[in-house]
Image 1 (tube, rainbow, N blue to C red):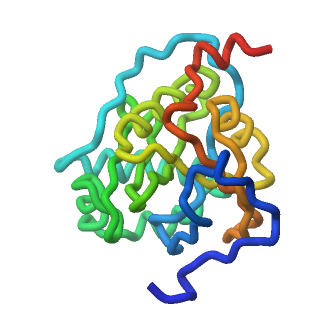
Image 2 (cartoon, rainbow, N blue to C red):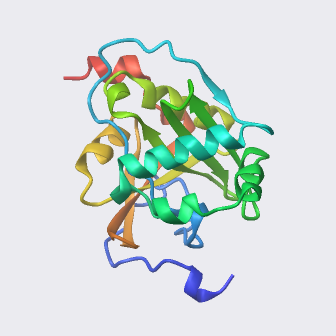
Length: 214
């Protein structure tokens, strides 16, 4: 991995190890496995969502491609990959991801229904990184993003969960904070400054608890 593939952290102060669950400041390689995902929903769930969420596997590459492209079309500024780049990828790329790999990292992807939302979790050695977090506009505010996050968190074999969110995207940042994520650092991203947030699995706030908070 070359130095050019590492993102540079800004000089914002970092929290202590009591709140930052990573063993050391994280520097992730750039590319698909590190793209910032910022399309969450900060509104508290009001209507229970019964839509089925399932992990993708071999044979689901077309569902993954369709959902991913829909997300990129809906929220082009929220992701590190453009619609055009993703649309040009060959079948092997999508087959590789549904088989549980992004680059050389182990991963898992979940899709809600026939493409109402998605999330991908990456095993990053000493923690799990969440990417490709997205739900359709009509399913925002229904608690679907909470359920997607629950699937990814339960899959993690690590106590520490990490994600990036655009510093200007207050909606998504509030959504993650509502679920228990905390800011641990900032760095320069492809489309502006990004915030790194972490969560310990044991500190995960239940959707019901977050709804009862004024």
